[in-house]
Amino acid sequence: MLLIDKYAYFNGLKDVHPLEKMVFALSLLLFSLTVRDMAVSLITFTVMSALIIFAAKIPLSYYLKLLLLPGFFILSGTITILFSFTSKFTSISNIWWSWKIGNWQIFISDDSFGTVANLITVVFCSISCLYFLTLTTPITVILSVLRKLKVPSLLVDLIELTYRFIFIFLDTALAIHQSQASRLGYGSFRKGIRSLGLLISSLFLGVLQRSEQLTMAMNARGYQENLSYIEDTYTYSSRNWLIAIVILGSLILINGYL
Amino acid sequence: MDEHIFHIEGLTHQFADGTFALKGLSLTIQQGKKIALLGNNGAGKSTLFLHLNGLLQPTAGKIRFKGKKMKYDRKALLSLRKQVGIVFQDPDSQLFSANVQQDISFGPMNLGWDRITVQEKVNWAMAETEVTELKDRPTHFLSLGQKKRVAIAGVLAMEPDVWLLDEPTAGLDPYFSRQIMNLLDSIHHPDKTIILSTHDVNLAYQWADEVVVMNDGKVIYQGDPVSVFHDEDVLLQAHLEKPWVFEMFQALLQSRNPAERDLFPRTKEELLQKLETERIY
Image (cartoon, rainbow over all chains, first blue to last red):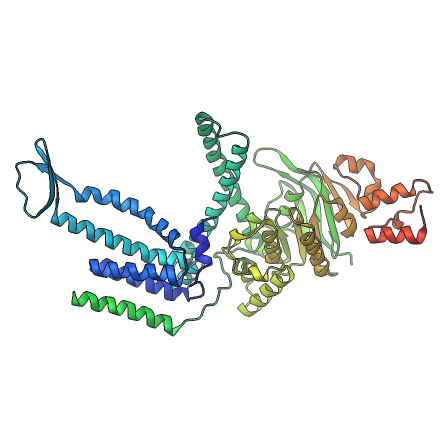
């Protein structure tokens, strides 16, 4: 069971209309990506994180763990931007830090420092917007909004089935792994490699078989061209719209003044 | 009523790898019956079910549904599946929507009913199978027993005339097994036909009007649920045991004259009553 998925179903904001959450998160995301301003990004990040922790009631430790994941990527990515190399005789203006070895010097310029700082804040701000959406809104609900927005049903159906299959895939893999481990399949490195190979090949066969069964089950219930269900009902709240507009509006104002 | 729902003649099914699942099977299913399909593993019970829903096409032989030869074009299949509902053995292969209510509404929506009717049927089906409180749960959060009940609700909401249930009680605890059987009793009606495959002879003996025993792709017995357990050859071939009520009664009768078949008790209650009234021991 994926914890991130579980929180999407059981969180403090689960009854809020999905369109409100989507419009809110995506408009903040778009705004901060267009202006690429550190202050705006920082404020957005703070607001989103506060909403995730206090409104949606996602445990802080879990949220930090989630941030750590893209954190590694951004760190490894920015190191290459941060440091520059040149020969030791080149003179560089607005240097922030430098170190000479042999004929070379490694340095961090004010410019690259600024770029990196900006990049990190923008990335974390975008991530917080997306986490807000994924942690408060289940995929199914997002899909039903997409259906209402007339996104091609083939695409939406595909996402839905993919989503369902992730869990079947995980369950099957876990079951195979347990049965292998209980029969000492991972006793040594060599055995482990062999077992893993077997696991992967049988997983693919198993999932193929599943998809065949699923097609049958869908046909048995009169599947025609697209998946149709009763949609869950949510009510719009003018208070939520107001909050969203106020937050976005003040960000635009802040950006204007700075 | 003895209108034939299904009339199967010489049905043969060969898999792509060359093995035969059904070998010239012939069977007639009458309307309004409660039929238990027994048979050892690999006898071809599930394959037969897939054929009855038009999910597989015969390699040889033919199936008549309500007197008409089954056709496999879109329109014919859709009309067949409106009338025949199938509950698969593994609910994971049946449930695909992300949440319970959506999954149950999938079939009824495909039938083209209006929204209000669909919602009514879905609510009713959820209440009957006791899954109403799970309605917003994603299907991958459910336990096996819950998944099984949701799978049944998904077919129930379509109100089919013919039910095919592939081992509906396997993996369920006694409470929910009994509840599923009660549900089947409440569905049962002179117009509805229920065919249920099971390994549970006690359940078949107690519940069914008619027992069909399959072995190696053929039907080796079709008839009332009492005589089948007198037929030692059939029992041996299909790896069937005798229901405990039956065996008990047989043992009690040993000291007396052979009993008339229709007098055999079918349930624990009937057995106890016989013990009291007839003083056979």
